[in-house]
Image 1: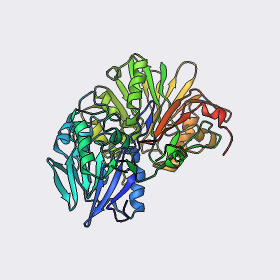
Image 2: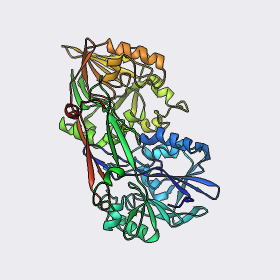
Image 3: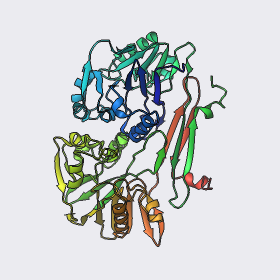
Image 4: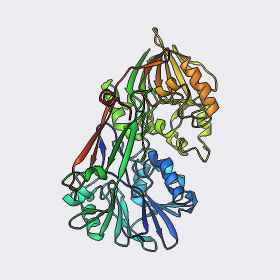
Length: 248
Length: 250
C-alpha cells in the first residue's frame, strides 16, 4: 500500500470461524480524501470501545466523521453507526427497505436494525454515484438485498460482496451465506473493477494474478480456566503462518 | 423450580473484539418458561440450538428476565418479541439517554424493545415467582438486578455481571465495575453472601465454599483462522479441558 493511501484500516477483517458461535471479524476502514473523513462500515457492537480507542489514537474525534458508508446492515457491520453525530449514513435504499422488515429466517440481520438506524441522519442511495471526490459507490447486491462497495482510486472497499481472498481466488462465493443469486455476479464485478480489494472478512489483497495480501495481522486471545491462576494466552497471526511452506 | 444452563459465560478477551458471551439460563417457575438474559448476537445460533435441545423454540419462551441493558445481554431480544420482558426500571429509564462514555448500553435499546410487552421491576427486592427473589446489584450498570432461586436443596445466585467471573469471588473485588465501583463492591459482597452456588455473568457456574471455587460446568470451543488464499488453517481451542495440559504459569 502506498504511504499516501487515503484508506486506513481500523479493523482488519478475518475469515475466521468458530464451531458454535459467530465471529463476525469484519473490516472497518477510514477514508481521508479531499478534506473529507469517511468511515466504511462500523463493525459489530463488539468492536465499539476498541473502535473508539483506535479513532482517538489517530487523533480523530467522532464528530469529524462526515459520512458513514454501510456496505450492508448485518449485525457485524452496522451496529456502531450511531457513534458519529455529524455523519450522513449512506446505505442503499433497497438495503434500508429490507432493514425495516428483515426475513424472519435471516440469521444475520437483527430485527431491530431498521428502527435503530431510523434515529440517524440517513442518506439512502440508488445507482452508482460519487459521495466524495474520488469515492464512488458501487452496487454489489446479492450478499444482502442492497450491498454496496466504495471505489477509492483503484482500491475497492467491497464489504461482503468479496468476503475473502479465497473466494476471489476461486472466483466463487463459497465462503458467504448469500441472500440471492446476484452475489456471484457482484463478486466478478468487484474483481474486474479494482486492482486492490479490501474484503469484508479478510486482509486487503492485490487482485493479481497471483492474489497477494498487502497486510499482516495478529490477534491475541486470553482466557482462564482457573480463577486463582494466570490467564492463558493464544496468539494467532500471519507471523505464525509464515512458517508454513505454502505461505506465498 | 428448575435451572438449566443453556450457555455458560466465557471469560475470554481479545485485542480485536469483545466476546460478550454471557451466561444464559432457562428457568421454569410458576408455569412459566423464563429465559435469563439473551446474550450477544454472536451466540444466536447457539441459543437456538440450546433451546432446541430442551425441546423449545424461541416462541415457547414466554418470559425474558433481562438483568441489565448492556449490548451483550440484549442483542437477541428480537427472537422473543412475543414474550413478557422483565427488566429493572432504573435500567430502562437510563437507557433512554446513556452517559456519553457508557459504551456498554446501546443508545437504541428502546428501539430494540419497541412494541414488546415490558414489565419494569421496581428498585426494591421482591419475590417475583414462588422461590424466585430479585436481588438489587447496581454498580456494574446503573440498576442491574439478579435472582436468588431456592431450589429446595440450596440457593442459587444468578448474579449476572455483578459477579463477572469466579475471579471476583476469589479476589473479593469486582473485575468489571463499569458504572459505579463503590456500589459494585457492595453488590459483589451481597451476591456472594446470598447463596451456595453462583452463576456469574461471564464464567461457568461454581460452588463457593471456604474461599475455594469449584466449577460446575465445562465448555469447549474451536476457532479456525485460515491463511487464505493459499495458506493453511490454524485451529485453536478455548476450552476448559486445556487447563489440564497448559496449567504451567507463563
